[in-house]
Image 1 (cartoon, helix red, strand yellow):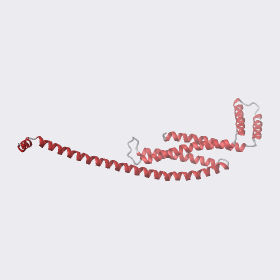
Image 2 (cartoon, helix red, strand yellow):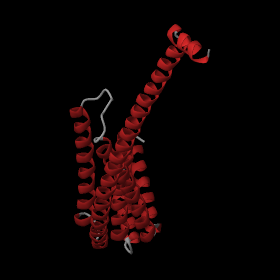
Image 3 (cartoon, rainbow, N blue to C red):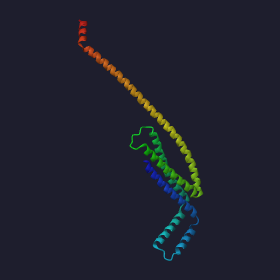
Length: 231
């Protein structure tokens, strides 16, 4: 999957997570006060002498929204937030892995059509957008949501930073191993080429010697000497 498709998936997950945070906040704020909220809505709507069709639609939608919030389980809402955060992190990590692979490939000769500057700019833009989405989530969960979400984010962020650092070290080690393997392959190929060159040279000398001896054997001088010797 290409980086821009992953970025679109990350953006969708962030939008859903933010909506989930708002929904969770409403569930927490409305808990226990649903009856009062509905009575307040009815009282306000009854004050309209001749409500329009649009006003009736808006009133019914708001009543249904409050009722849906009243029936919602905060734990399920929290689980939905976690699910969308997980999807965002999946896309985030997949993009980082693509960037890591590009770092490994950067040690090889690039034969594509894109310039180095264009590839670098694409990576910077994608990374900046990811960091921006991460900052938006962090701000909303810490400052725009109930305290328990802020606490959850802080714990998640600490654990994530630990894992990221572990993965960074593992990546450095993997990159080092890849470089060693590439060097060994190059050395092996060089040795094989050298042996092939020597083998070819030896074979040439043997063939040349055999040809010279054959030429001598078939020459008239050799024939004469041979006849003289055996008479």
